[in-house]
Image 1 (cartoon, rainbow, N blue to C red):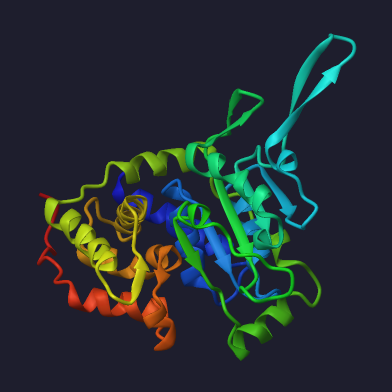
Image 2: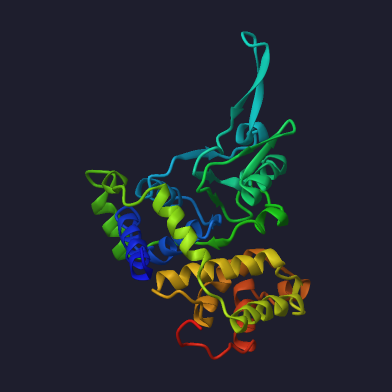
Length: 319
């Protein structure tokens, strides 16, 4: 495929997922781009707004093997990663893969389980592999975690470790549907489940081809320096206690390349960066007491940083 072919493929996938998820086009596009950029998605929102439906729609449209786990306090790390069990017939221990062995792993209400179980996800999210009893097992390719969590403060929730938050490429919030969209949801579910209408549009090979194409997207030195300047600004802002890590800057670059492909370009421009910057940065920041006292949210602070950091004047073709 050429650039226009990649763009058309992305549009077709988005339109297919929209059959099951009404009125959340922006969230659909961002989740798809994260999958294509080999990242993971954290969706934070109240129950019942379509988080799980979104993940299941993608698994059908992309023909991906998926598993789903409800993260309750009694879930153990071995349930996620797998474990060794003794086989009397062979007189050997055999590995039984955990629920995370699939292409698309839906971790429901991830912040309701223990920190020990949450930590089991760190290696598989970063390295796409799992180590059990000293033996390392590779996860299938492609591999993406879509995790949902209820807002902090809800009954039975725990804060995710900062190290785990940093491994999610973006964090999204779907929000309530508009009255018109909610009425459309009622009409669609009156006689059937819209998920049944989602058809296979792509497969693993197409996803891997798109991932390879995105990895080849050109990022100029000026745009790279702009991303670094945005990250550096978060490290020097008095309202921020802990700024963006280099992993966060890399995530910003990778998903900006995906946006470029979706827009029909093989090069990144500053508008790609600013479009997704809040989704990449916000969950990685730890605000200072000064920001909390001023009741200034992270999204507003990032917005101020985007306005303050001058963007390079790049709008032409790839050089």
